[in-house]
Image (cartoon, rainbow over all chains, first blue to last red; front, side, top):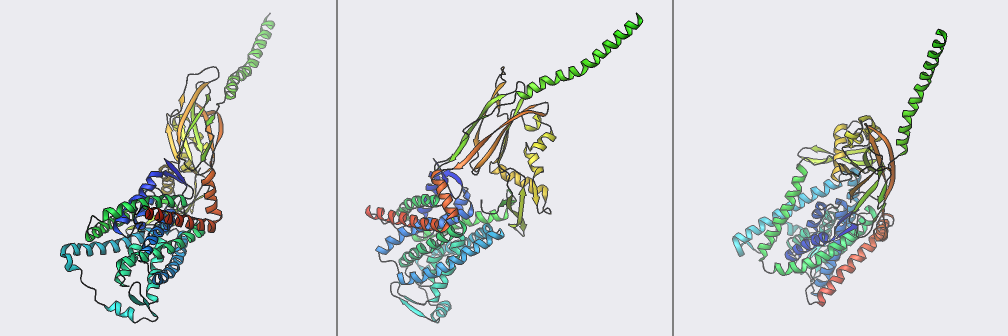
Length: 304
Length: 272
């Protein structure tokens, strides 16, 4: 059964869309982070115009993260104070990101920048995760050394306007989470992803937050960041397809429930190396697409 | 007697002279009769509605053709100037380098014939009426002119074919046995899913001896209706309201899913 997507302007099999959402939701539920970073390229592969795929993906993340954030909030895993600072930074970054995309579209380079950003970010995150989890698998518990405050931590500790965050059990300058989230917000707007796969490692390794609070707080701020991105994309670029986003959200919510149960059967290191492999495969596929001679030397200027 | 014979000869010659144009007119009369026997065309459906569950449509073209003529059926979308990105290689990667404006090409071109168009009509006729892809390729106008014209022309046609909005299919028009009113014909094809809403011209050409003997046309309308039309209009014209509705709908869906999951005793934790 096909469904006509009013903004994308294409007719696509309804079950394929729910299935794609379920597949990404399954991976999200299984690995704890990610989903959006896989969804946008998959949507492009099945014929959704790149700019509509990225904007609608943000809308889908609003649905998925609101559900996750509500559940984490009940469990006490949301640091609202830190999350609010992250949120302000994220919205500022998202506003900048949407402007960047608009300018790049006018120059005809939006699709290229989306693809290049994907390749670089997926390559970095995937490569780091792969090496780290490979080391973990090889050396077992020995690899998990306690973190010592390094030069970066010392530098961050000397910044002005230090603030205590009791829920996370940490103290930071207000500028650290702000700048961090502004950077992720820019990426979220350009790539159409929530940024969890960059944000959670940053919160754990740089802000020293406990893993479960990092995930809950990340979901909380991502919800608002992506709501902002969705609104701005709809208002500025008119590229949000609500029908597409809701179908994906239905699929991803079902997939996440199944994925969470399957994930419990695997060890943490095994999960991480599996996710890193998927991330790297997506990156390699996109990189090859940039280097190979395209099937057509012409493409529509407005992401048709 | 001799004078009578000469007069008779002159009379007969003048008769023959006057008869000659009469034969010419006589030859023209059947041609006019054939021209009057123009093909007919009926479309089913003549309106394609882009509804919520639109999945493309099957279009049937039927009618009668002049006896002995062969048929070429074309479907054309309105001409519109298209702005496209031109990819070029910079180092190892392909990036967009500059914009190309293409005018004079139909937004959609479908061609169906009893035989390939080039076998039915001469090149001058095909070019004049833009009845095959070669004619469209040569007829389009490209700016700026300094770009590699043949490469862009070929890539434009290839891109349209890849989207299925340019198609040429020979042998798909079926002609039945000729009767007093002509020969019935039929054609069935799948309407391209990527064709945008608009009005499309369906033309039927009766071809004989490399020229168009007669033609007929009809209109096929593709329009968004109901929910998709409302939603596309809202997204286009009232972006801020549409954005607000999108966020609210997504929040409602998310909290709704969490509510259901928690009621079912499951952890509704979904990553993003």
